[in-house]
Image: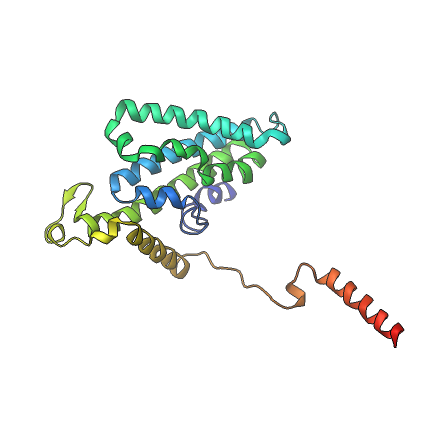
Length: 228
């Protein structure tokens, strides 16, 4: 059950884009068309999967003081390999994604999972975590791109949709349209998804500094009594 949870949590409950709000830059930039979104999602998923596997396998070998540079080197090597494959077999997609494909190296989703999960868990659990997060990232990109391409270009995967192709809402392919769809999807996930924000107690009992604060108040009271 725990193994299955490592895989499914990244799809909805801890979706990296719609719940954790990570990877916003490539999400907004590449979600103007479904093909670009799927290409970015698959590329990021492959890097997530293999980076989690490698970092988990090497977690006892990598020195703690230089772990972040080591993670970045591993991720950069994987991204380079993925970019070379895309250039060889899908040059049009490589041209469409442009700089955002090599920028997967600094994608906070990948580095975040390496630091928070892969470096602390076994290979199988890390692989499932990376795969789940990658699918969640791809799903979020697909949903955003579908809405923006259908209403912004009147097409879906490049195929024209009758009526909509002649009545485009051009702002949907621009930055304001991207933020609008992004916000609406986050609102839907918060409303209908399983993710529920934790209620915060703003009283003294919910404050992490309550003990220190109590001691300070007690000392102030004693000093006030002495002065009287």
